[in-house]
Structure formats: C-alpha cells, structure tokens
Length: 200
Image 1 (cartoon, one colour):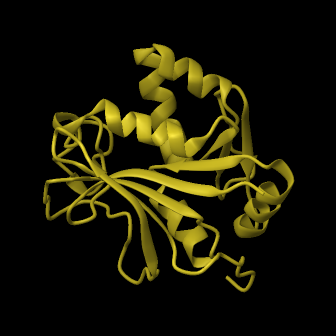
Image 2: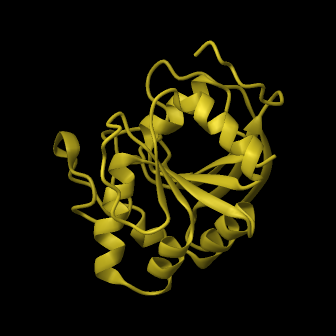
C-alpha cells in the first residue's frame, strides 16, 4: 500500500504561506512571500526526492494546483516536465472544476474515503505540497503517513500555518539533518500506525 506524505517548507512558527515568491500567495495581506528562497539548499531537494520514491503521484488542493500551474508553466525547466509527467490528483469541492495540466484527476465528494481507496489500489506514494486545508482534512481522518518538514530559521508572526488552531497529532521523529543554510530537514511519522478514521 502506498503512503500519503506531506512535504512542506515551514518557518519556526509554522507558517507555510508563500515560501517561493513575493506574489505566490498574498491572502490576508501577507507581505513576506519568498521567505524560503534565502535558505534554499540542494540537500532539501534531495531529501524530498528520496522520500517520494520512484512510484509517486501528487495530491493537491485546488489552490496549490493552480498556483503551481501558473508559476512552473512560465518558468519551464526540468521541474515543469516532471510535474507534467507525474500523475496529479486534485481535491476540489467543485465537481465540475476544470484541470488544465496533463495527467490530472479531479477528486470530489468524501475525500478521506477516496484517498483511502487510492492508497490501497495504486501502491503509489501520494505527495502533498502546500495544500494546508487538504492536509488538515486528511490528518483528521488519520490518513497522513509521513511529514517531511523543511524548517527554516525564521519567525514571521503572520501568515497561514500548516497546523492551524485545533489541529492535534502525536508524532515521532524518524530522521533529521541540517543544511548548510541553517534549515532543519525533519521527517515525522504518526506515533501509532494509521488506521483510517471513517467517522471524520
């Protein structure tokens, strides 16, 4: 069975909003976009690739999917090709949502049940980037198997956080390393093996 793996850049105070560029995500007047760029490090990219494995797909919320589409189709390069070629599953409350990237599949309805079936049937690792709302929804259903967090030595004091108020989880650290730029690459897993909570 595959895994659901969350991979995100976060600050020390848990902010995940707009790590890549100034205009990436300005919701709520967020003015610190691009905060992860000064600490970018190839070792973090390598760690993400190792955790994904060769057999993986992406699992996105609709907003993150559209942001990646707009930014990487402009930038081009090998990451654009990898994103185009990799299966992408996109969660949306709109069952008629249009998905413009190739290899994209819309997920709607009872998302925890749909993701449970995907994990069981495909054998793929499903990688979530960004997508805070989606992450918290799957956390509540005990469907996250692993968290790879790239924790930056930075406190912003404002912005969307990965773990919003009311989120609860008990995790154990299974791997950690630091980069030359001062970030901490930490891999966490649930303290107990996940059993899907279909009551959520």
